[in-house]
Amino acid sequence: MYEYQQSGRYFAQVADDIKDIAETELLELGAVETSPSYRGIYFNANPESLYRINLHSRLINRVLAPLKTFDCHSDNYLYKVGQQIHWEDFLNPEQTLAVFASVTQSNINHSKFAALRLKDAIVDYFREHAGKRPNIDTRNPDLWLNVYIEKNVAVISVDTSGGSLHRRGYRMESTQAPMSETLAASIIRYAAWNGQTPLYDPLCGSGTLLCEAYLAATKTPSAYMRKKFGFERLPDYDAVLWAKVKREADNKVQPISNNLIQGSDIDLKAVTTAQKNSAIIDPATQIKIIQKDIFEIEELEDTTIICNPPYGIRMQQEKDLSAFYKNLGDFLKQRCTNSTAYIYFGDRDYIKHIGLRSAQKWILSNGGLDGRLVKYEMY
Ligand SMILES: C[S@@+](CC[C@H](N)C(=O)[O-])C[C@H]1O[C@@H](n2cnc3c(N)ncnc32)[C@H](O)[C@@H]1O
Image (tube, rainbow, N blue to C red; front, side):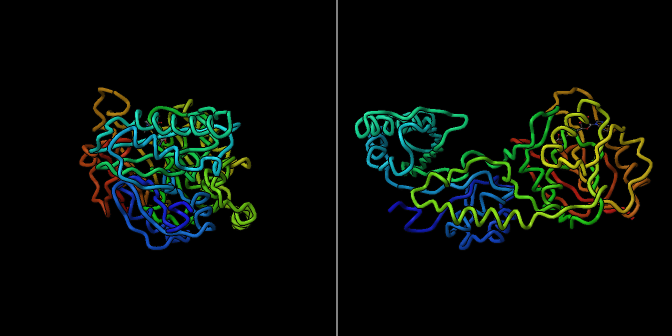
């Protein structure tokens, strides 16, 4: 029996800033005994909930199922323990694998080296036991493995998601400074958008916020386009149970009204990209995206406005955007009566230029940048 089978305990990798809403999401999807930790949340789940979490979670990056935890003071020992696991429980030599590692405060002090040693152990294991070795594929392997070593304690886990869940499958093209799907999903979640009030992103770029809003409103699972999950490689994988979880999810998908979700951008290339991306999840093109300068929008009343204005850090523009943010504040004040805006600032220095009193603020970093989500209510 492997560790996750004995304990029913898993680790969800998630960005530190959104652990509060990610924990709530995990509980909604059937996790129990959640316990937030550094860069993730430990939780217990039965196989059905594990499958459901992987299919539906909009906020977590991946779920790890621990196989073995052990003291590990050298790469030779990692290799030795790596050879003791019965790898034929997880894959056959015709299939492919990849090992990802992360190490901290340990004798083995290079992640890539740890990954390499475990990979060697597995490959040698197969050579000895099957006379054949599986190939490595770091982009789309059948088996995704993870080794985490902290203070010389190692955990070897299967990535039950099969690669990061932020890859929803709808972003075929991107524009300048697109935001990650999980960040966009967390903004929709913090906004507590009810899926009824019209939602508009007037600076939509590649359309990530619009796509995440669409998935939320239609109750479409975030991983519904994913072709294979890592949990399918677990020895106790139950295909009948997985089919049931999928069927239940399919039955819950609901249509939305036309014009519920709309967006625009000044840049034609961004608009084309957003239209192409959104058409992948929304073939009926209910998400309406047009080319328009935000300052030419006459009014956006009774609307949930969600957007991510340009910011210099990512775009490497020297340009001072203070005037842009002042105009954005004026636009919200003068033309958005009765609307609520959630503005994501990639550079929080610009918050002061908007000239509006905030109703709420969240720290939300974006790929290492110290961003803020700010809520404004217009009357
Ligand atoms: C940070 S990007 C938005 C990224 C988007 N959230 C995504 O995930 O792709 C900011 C966007 O604002 C657009 N923009 C800048 N000035 C604008 C204006 N005056 N009117 C409309 N869009 C504008 C840019 O073209 C750019 O696509």
